[in-house]
Image (cartoon, rainbow, N blue to C red; front, side, top):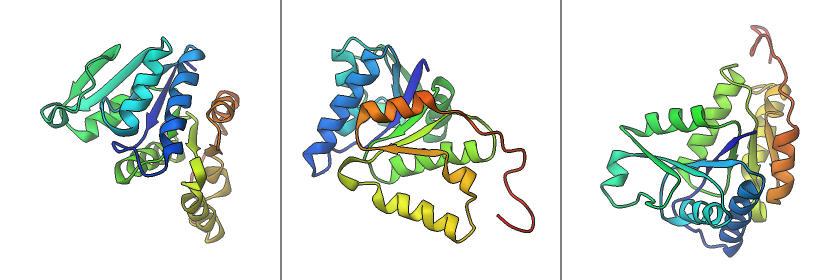
Length: 193
């Protein structure tokens, strides 16, 4: 694994453990010689993880849409910062640059980005691992939702297993590194899930 995309909030959130975990994750990624790919911002958990990885001597690649650069939200100290036209272009470029995906706590954008690349894996468009860093139970409701979707036969168990989880950055990185993709020749059956 050469690069990991981290989706996370443009705010710090109210729990100081979110910031602490962003620092730990950015540092751990850099210490493993893995490049960090993220949304290119200098605010919130985005700025924290980028600064942590850079401080640990890591490479950090940011991808940011032009309209956010014009709001002065672009991190100017990165290894490389790419400006793209739209949010859609940003997601596609981050996915292209990354070998795995992690979501730290975040809001609508974090959830949307993580679920889109997860859907791409479900559809067989890639076989990269996905992980939730579940700090202080932040993602417990989402994980329960995924389990409920399996119970309701709206998500197949093999696709539920696409989401790895951990409460500690090092453990999650180990799980992503050990991930073995499952070949699913058909993602849905006409009769049943």
